[in-house]
Length: 392
Ligand SMILES: Cc1cc2nc3c(=O)[nH]c(=O)nc-3n(C[C@H](O)[C@H](O)[C@H](O)COP(=O)(O)OP(=O)(O)OC[C@H]3O[C@@H](n4cnc5c(N)ncnc54)[C@H](O)[C@@H]3O)c2cc1C
Image (cartoon, rainbow, N blue to C red; front, side, top):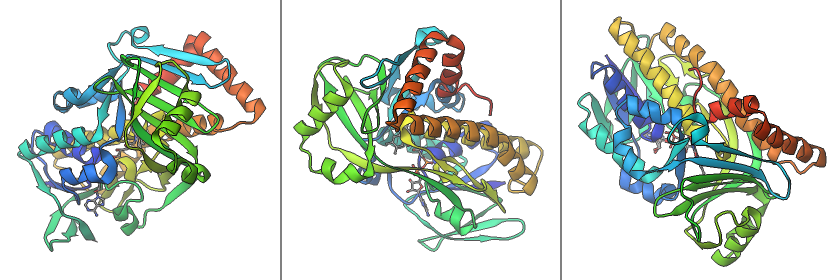
């Protein structure tokens, strides 16, 4: 029994490890990744950090991965959400939910290196890296991939974990619906005069939403969205002018902004696949859906795909079921629908509401923030999804 995973990003690596742990190595996994880990630093991944929800961390503990990541993680104990120049704000504190941390922030490059080390130790996983899948041949009872080094690998199921606009998905006639926010996300690591001390911030500004997350060495990671038309203007700003603009938009909650690292920018849009399965193929992570980064839900949702698929495969393995059979793929697609729909709706709704400068909507969102700070039921419903406490 074997599964081929294409893509060694966060989704592909955690899926390989989840299958290995949940099936105690009884399902063989071939993982194909185009880039060596040291190349990822050059691809711009060094500056990107992601926030893992409390629910995600619990699942990573369950599949034996968290202990390897914890030394490159920073806990979030408090989140402050506000709207620049308006009255609404809401606070979330770990103590309110009787947990030590609302989530953890990990640096992607460091996490990737640690996950690859775990894969090298997993007896049931064969790594093909660097190697790129160039063709896929599907027959009735198996799937075969052809690598750019001419090697052929076959298995019962092919998992496309090859990221946004998945080429494998396209080769299997899957299509994506794109909702363009006409925004770019600028990311940079910054140093402020005050220690963030576990505090994270989400602030809605005139240019677009910004998020500040605590990371190692008392620094913060910034994601700041702007309308795409401003890209050229932003690219020519020197560091001091960029920090001045950020200080005006963010305010003084962390004191003075003292330093900024190299800035990277990403186009942001919402991509949703019309189907998440095809004959002997399943999509996970960004290949299945790519979300706006500001709400920090992309990988958290992707990991719920990963864990659900690993559980279904583990169960199928125990019952000698075909790992790429129609029934199994249908179960996976059905099981993921509701969570995917709800998480996408929440992220998309937030972006559209907070990207809008229309006076009536500004009023509505401030009333919303005010209501959330005073109505525990409403606040908790949003928090539960952000914490990853959702059914899969
Ligand atoms: C600025 C920013 C901030 C974010 N913040 C958060 C956050 O706070 N919380 C959160 O949960 N999410 C966040 N996200 C989203 C998160 O980063 C992604 O959801 C996650 O990293 C995607 O992982 P993936 O493995 O699905 O895809 P990818 O990381 O894109 O990995 C795909 C891999 O497949 C490989 N590949 C592609 N084609 C082939 C092929 N033919 N053969 C072999 N290999 C191939 C690629 O080399 C790549 O390594 C953020 C995203 C951005 C842009």
